Image 1 (tube, rainbow over the protein chains, first blue to last red):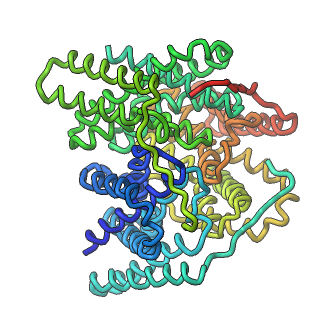
Image 2 (image 1 turned 135 degrees about the vertical axis):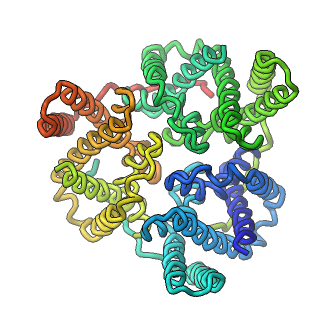
Image 3 (image 1 turned 90 degrees about the horizontal axis):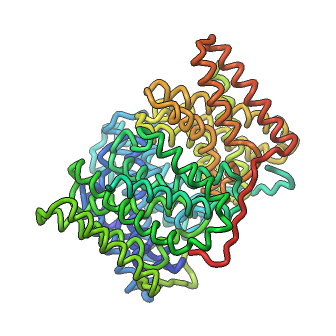
Length: 205
Length: 205
Length: 205
């Protein structure tokens, strides 16, 4: 089940990457590249930081085809995208939760400390979007808006807690998923966000 | 032969990095850093993503000296650079093709799948320039302009096809080189480019 | 002793990261992320490039807690920060020198060539700040201003020279530290900087 959600998630992320590339007037090659990086960049960064070689997509070329295709399809479908805004945000929320759980699992299997497992979940969940924003010259949106990275952290903590209690694996997954998506949807609906730190010194560096 | 072309290529790339650094008024240390990263960053990223340690330049300090020197030399020669514009574009095209073929070869020797071999070629070919543009705060030019990354992809495909047909290795090299450089020169001359995806939504994220 | 200085250094770097995040109006989660990356990003990049797995902070979760806490503390203390400007610059100089020496030691123990050892020192010393600036959308300040990266290089060279002469290890450390901090303080005080390369072509790429 996690695999199917993963495939939906990388597709949704690839499409969000393609739209960001379109806002920067990239050519269709650039669209494919950004789609690929948005979808698979988080997992890649996690694998490199954890020393988990080979990096997962190098063993699954089909992920490359899927994400690049999703990016190019977005170019064709772009004019209809705003009708799908809500569906899209839901897919993105699913992606965030799926990526987080997958990232936690990878680090767990490598025997890392709990804090690192949570970091691995967050890196997988949010870094694709961070790389997309760097390449498209924006201050990473996940570091500024609404509850996003924090949802990833909470899902990771919940998932680890449930697993530690020895609860059935599928139940853990479903519970973490439900809580994660509900949190994210609430965050979007009520514009929940963490306090912002604004600092404008007169003289600094 | 590939080695000599490689040395010319990293020199040309280092010089293009130095010029980009100059447009951002960096000090000469920054010029050296950007020159080094533009020339060797693509190969470094490839090695890290493929888990191919040690990274190549860590075994060849002479590449560091060469690229940093080329960057600093560019500072002195900058006022004459625009006379060399055409030579420079040609060297850059040679670099793109040489980097691509070298990148493909590295991934081939590590036994990766064909799709990953092509990715390795492209990463080696274009990522130095992408890193340069990120550090100099530009939307990466290779994702927006003319045929560049796509030339890298085509050269990779051609090279692999020729090798698979069992053609003499040197012949494969020369043919891929010739086609790659001609493609790139045509792209520059006639301003060939892929269709651009422009997306300006009213309300999105 | 180096460990204590290291802990002070990552705290100071984390605080500088938090202030940069505040200038971009990030939320407190983003502040924590930038604090962490500024403090530990240089060492992480060094470990990945040298193939030195596991990356050091994945074995020391307490470094994560320390840097994130320092970042969040900065949010509370921000209004008093400009009174501490000078103390802060001194801590930052200590950090630069400590990071450089630690980076050199890591590469030395892995048996790398001298040039790579110096590179490892510089990467550890300056790349945290470079990553901070990329994420906060600034042209990296260390590539443009005052003697900073060059102090890192000089400290590395001095440290290696002294070690090679067979001088007592603690003495090497103290001497490198003293010279590094004095150099950096002089650079700040007299606004010493390397020549800047300004290049503004009419027609280029």
